[in-house]
Image 1 (spheres, rainbow, N blue to C red):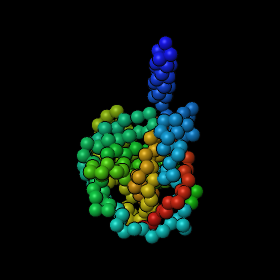
Image 2 (image 1 turned 90 degrees about the vertical axis):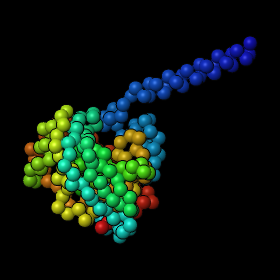
Image 3 (image 1 turned 180 degrees about the horizontal axis):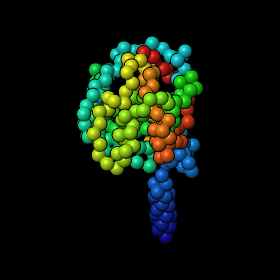
Image 4 (image 1 turned 120 degrees about the vertical axis):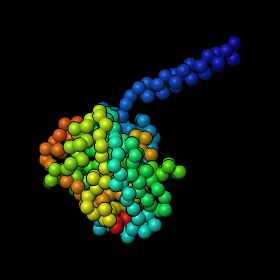
Length: 242
Ligand SMILES: [Zn+2]
């Protein structure tokens, strides 16, 4: 009898755990009710990680770049790409991504997406917009993200192409997203800025911003304006500058 009761209790416990997990999975992370302060419910790393992104970059405290991690860009590829609104951002997935090289390894461009304000700040300055070009080392699976800040200025042809191509296939060259100067940047090791907030992500933040017109920034912000995660603690990490 006792044995049966224990079995029944265990079964009840198991099913209540399963239920709790199910309801958790039905919740979706976002930037409002289930916003950044709740992301620990979706992935512990978001709440407990000590190498999280974004951060505030303090140029005066940055150290000299470790040259073996210098960034070499090969993004100049003419390709088609799918443009979708994934509920967190406008995301563009090229059929044939360009590549970058760092530490003697090749990382392939998987996708790029936009934030309605920059996530990283530089000396506290938040840029008008940012594009994150997400790359992956196909051997080790490590991610490397290049961030290009946008400042209000001249019209940006590729942004028109992306915003006009929502739910369609467009022709693009990801190199068109890059500013003229790609040789100067900040580098550090951080995380994804959305759940699961996985760490060991190589971040490269180009110092020279690209431009977008006021109308383009407003057009993007009709979709997303507050899709930026708050600034995270630097902890014992160093930011390098090139
Ligand atoms: Zn992003």
